[in-house]
Each structure stands twice: as C-alpha cells, then as structure tokens.
Length: 159
Length: 77
Image 1: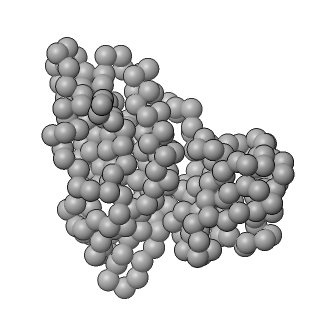
Image 2 (image 1 turned 120 degrees about the horizontal axis):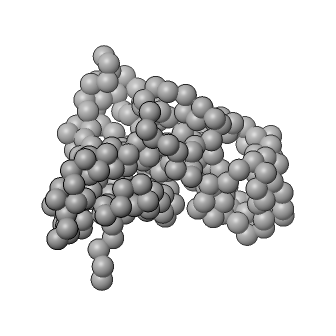
C-alpha cells in the first residue's frame, strides 16, 4: 500500500517517516518544518493544546496544498502530517517535508505549505492556560478572513 | 434532511458535533440565516461553509442529503 502523503493522525509523528515519503533520486535538497507546541505566547503560559480537525476535508485540503506546490515549483515532492488530540509543550503538531532538485524551491515551498495550512486546512486548536481556555481563531493576530473567505484557489504568496 | 457539522467553539456552544435539520434546497446564505435564527451560533458570520467537504460560497446551493460543515477560522500548524 502506498504511503499517505497528506495525513491527519492522533499519535506522535515519526519525522523520518515523513522525510522518506519525499526522498527522490533527483532531489538535491529536502527541507523539513517541524511545528511544535510553545509554552509562552506573550505573557500567557500554555499548559497544553488540544487540536481538532475535520479529518476527511483536512486531508483533502492538505493534498490541495501539495498540488499547489507542484504547480508553483516543479520537481518538488511534498508530504505533510498534522497531529490532533491533546498535545503537551514541545510535542510535534505538524511535520512538512519538501524535496526538490535545488534548495531554494525546497525552502520556499515548505514555507508556502505552512502558510496555506493556516489559511485553508480545517484544523483548530484550543489553548489551555493556567487561568482559562480558548479556541484560537487566528494565531497570527490578523483578521481571520480579510476578504470574508479564505483564498481557496491558491493565493499569490509572494508578498 | 441535511447534516450540519460543528467544530471547535461552535461544537462546545451547541453541545453537539452534528445537527440534523430539514432543509430541502437553498443557498448557503439562506442556510446560514436559518441556522442563525434557530441555533444562535456565534462566529457564524466569520465562518466558512463547506458542502460535502469542499468550501462553498454564499450563493452555492445546498440540497437535501448534503453534509454541510461550518468552518470557523482555522488555526492549524
């Protein structure tokens, strides 16, 4: 059975397994992004995070991110796994691996992937603090959807 | 009937992750108005709607048998 390149999982993520999915004889670079759970956000101390996903759609949207990357940077391979459930400080929430013949597209495509995840992939996180909890709508502190909707057809990310 | 899936804060407010409602055919905007008046969900105006796992626009049609998800602003990563 071919390995799933775009996946939502409940268990800890094996980074090497994600890297292996993008290995390629023509690759000259593999970049990985490892998103981890941060303790301090400003002066707020997080105790743990709870991630929730609309799993079937989230996997489809991760796949769409992969397709967008394939169109923007030819010769790249992408694998993304996002974990859901209860995560402690320093746990890995997401791993993105991108291989490419050259390093620059591998870096660029990897950054594009995490930005798109934050825009279009239906995954939510609830921060549990010492003195309360809240579902975070937009951790970048931007207006959630400035145009009233997410850019679902691959916005231009050059800015 | 259509199934309406709720997530994150909306799910906690409604105390359920799915609502089944009688809705034969109408636009996303019409469905949102109906949900707003019946269930008083917060965040509805800032949420996206997905029909059968694909993002939909206000004028898209929702039909009997569809699964509709209310997608509040996402925060993965």
